Amino acid sequence: MQTMLRTAVCVFGLSIPPALPAQQSTPPPRDSALALGLAAGESAAEPKRRRLVDNDLDLGFTTFHFGAGYLIDVAAFAQNEASKEQFQLEPAVKVRDARLIFRGRFNTSRPITWQTGLMYDGLTGDWFVRQTGIMVAVPEIWSHFFIGRAKEGVSLNRVMVGYDGWTIERFPFSETIPLLADGIKWLGYLPNRHLIWNLGVFTDWLSEGESFSTYDHQLAARVAWVPMVSDSAGKLLHIGVNARGGKVNDGQLQIRARPEAHIAPYFVDTEKFPAGSARQVGLEAYYRAGPLLIGSEYYLQAVNSSETGDPRFHGGDVAVTWLFTGETRSYNTVGGYFRAVSPTRTVFEGGPGALEGVLRVSYTDLNSEGVEGGIFWRITPMLNWHLSDHVRLELVYGYGSLDRFDVEGATQFFQSRLQLAF
Image 1 (cartoon, rainbow, N blue to C red):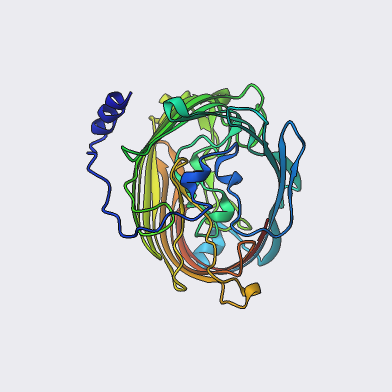
Image 2: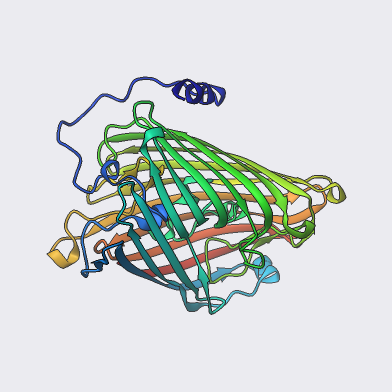
């Protein structure tokens, strides 16, 4: 098994050197991701360091935990004349989403966890079933197996729960990756090789008609190499490769994305065009040194569409974050994603909370061959104030340029978000 994995890593052009030298001798904190492993729901199942309420019950055959989240967005816009020709944007205050999460662990000798999630979409006014299923740990082969509705597993930024990310929204091109899918996913971690992987097989038997269900079936894979000092402190390097492919639902594909503002309309949009299948590959690289985090992801999507000349789309982002108050964003070594910021001293404990500065540049190109979906880029400086593990305030400025409808318009974004979660 180890020989096979080493060979697979070498195929991607990576070598496996010894672990980074230890810079501290203190043991990891009690909520270290190494100790927690994975639970059903992956990043959505990450427990908070501090408890807001006693939300755990023991029902005998299973434990029962309940949680909730709430996001409210404020946005205003300043447009030049070309931008106004493309879209008429109005300031608004809207609920981004509200969600309920229920999870637990069955009383079995082998770790088996479960989760179900429900989300209210503030734009549509509808409730949706989110990550829901069962996770079975198989430590004999360094693995977990998830059965149910889950994230495909492609893209670190996509795998992270949205509440934990450093930006107000994910970068636009990541919207080409369906957020959820129904199927089976195999997740593995070899700590002595610093190797993380997941492989998922999905179908739309149960999700037909859902907004995220744009494929009849798909295969998704991710492999990452992660040497580190600690999952919660010190230096960490994450280098990953992603690949996915699938048969397009009903022979019609539409790729679209909002401009990192959920209140705004879809800025880039291919509209529906004939397509048989699509393939996507991508790279992700992140480096963490204490309070500093630098990361980038970039993806290329090739669509099998003879009617439009087999278009190819691409896009990604580069982001730099700095925690001015000195915290380090921890990392789940089994799932391969970063966790939410936990302030050293919260505002409610008489401290400053955690202040995080962010700068991101994103790019999306949906123009190719016979498809004109538009080209959009945006630069976003922003400030996150993590008042506690449960309360976060975001202050955001963005400048974006959209080349679409035969004009190139510029838009300034003024955004804020209040986030509550427990």
